[in-house]
Image (cartoon, rainbow, N blue to C red; front, side):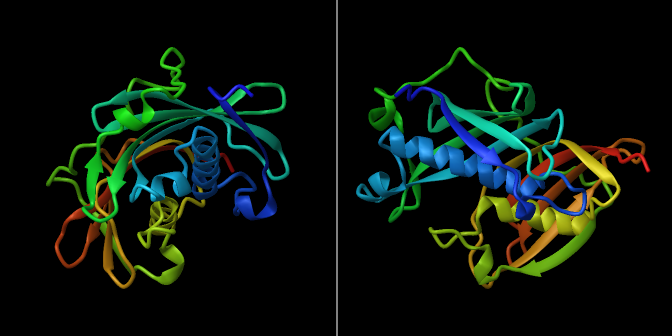
Length: 250
């Protein structure tokens, strides 16, 4: 088996699409996460293997560029590969291709290994030095783009919610896909098509916590939205990023 690049066949199901009839960003993230998890298992660094050493993977950055959103019942392939180690970070790239091998979506991600007890990053080199990285193939840039803190002069719209049980993952933190789901509810993307987005995950949320979702446009004439998702009690940012979009032609 060629373990360098994992290829995951996916049929876009009815529950993967929303009102647009296309794959929703939240479910795109779920398919990327699933492909990454399966590949990690094959490489011997999946959830169960790392759990033996009291370690888990945590996603810290995700950058996505969309050429075309897949349609319901469309058959696509998610390709993914680990690209390199940059200090504490391990980068992993993705391509989503249609049946004709056309690239529909490009994505780049960064992950850290976290000690469950100490809640501190673990240096990945010793566990990954003999794994098959593919540094020569880049879906996007060398490292996912990170957005700086929202400038003080930008007018923000604020939405509030509370973390509930269905938001949690196996580590009892809010699953990374939920942040995008919260954001879609906050901005109401009914009349827009997302063309790219990037997310930076910096602080975990747990069940029962109150959340502030702040969104704003850096320029009212641009199809560009920036956001922060904060802990209401402390103001500490848990997730931040930006979305680019274009109007849907009616």
